[in-house]
Image (cartoon, rainbow, N blue to C red; front, side, top):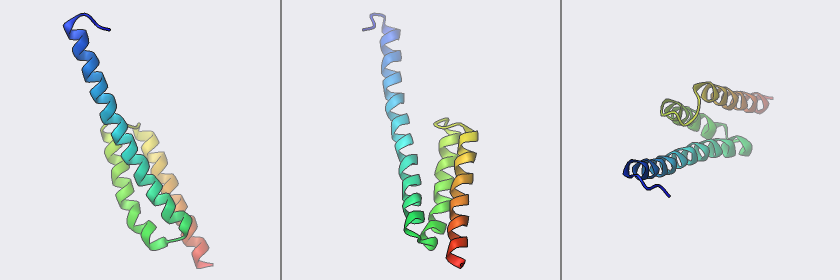
Length: 92
């Protein structure tokens, strides 16, 4: 337990930032899960609609420092690849 006033404040700020970051990570995970559900159900139209929204959320979280920009680009690439695979199997 901190005794010094500045240490108490830093602890409060750290807790507040931790809660905000947890909420942001949860929002990111939810968006990716919604997209993955559309992919796994084979719904190409819904997946195409969700892809730009998911990309936007991923970019926002990378800008805010929730995830690294390279991880964001890697995740976006993987999501786009899944959609392409789904489209190719739907054509055959």
